[in-house]
Length: 111
Image (tube, rainbow, N blue to C red):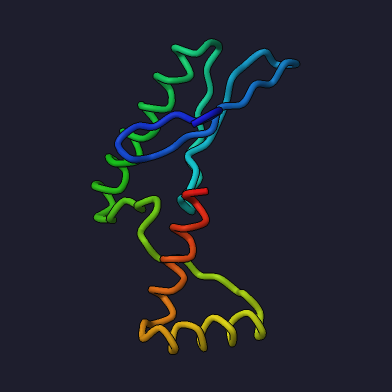
């Protein structure tokens, strides 16, 4: 992935501030705000890994379960007309609406 790092299943953005001459980012796809920075690629990566490891420690010390990116739940708001059309097609195919949406998303992402 471009402009992203991955560690322990967590993804972090990579940005550059030319005025401050630092790289910075935050952990994406979770609600908690976890940020990091570095002056070069190596220190940015080290800061990202350290931020994730610290997050695990904080969660453990507070008795919390760390948030998981991509938990498998996705809320969409297709609007009434698209919702109706999708529900009818799902019913005609004998599948539930979630299955229809999964199939449609898989097909879209293949192309």
